[in-house]
Length: 139
Image (cartoon, rainbow, N blue to C red; front, side, top):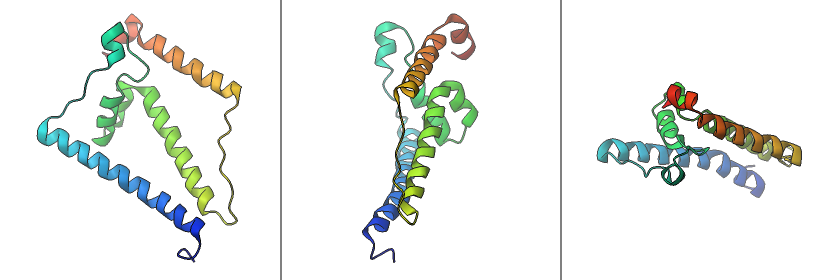
């Protein structure tokens, strides 16, 4: 059944290939970091302005997640971890909708109210993380 239906073949490739690709990329990055001590460039926004951007700490949080250290990853950038959780949820919903019989189309509903709320969260997080008390506690 899976081999005859084009829809289910695509769903299978999506459901299996994406996590395998992500795991292989994570293993390659960890191997390169451990073997060659690869470090990444500093944040250009912080370099130019002196302020932390919304994604400052995301690379360090990613490496902490790859090592399995969730608390350290949250410490580096909690908004990035929340973004990854939401992205994982949306991926799971997409795969479930592709595999459901009959096919149910997966649509992300992002109206202007939700867009304003998300933007406000990002702005407030960026302002708070540049406050002196946050800098003293987390950096």
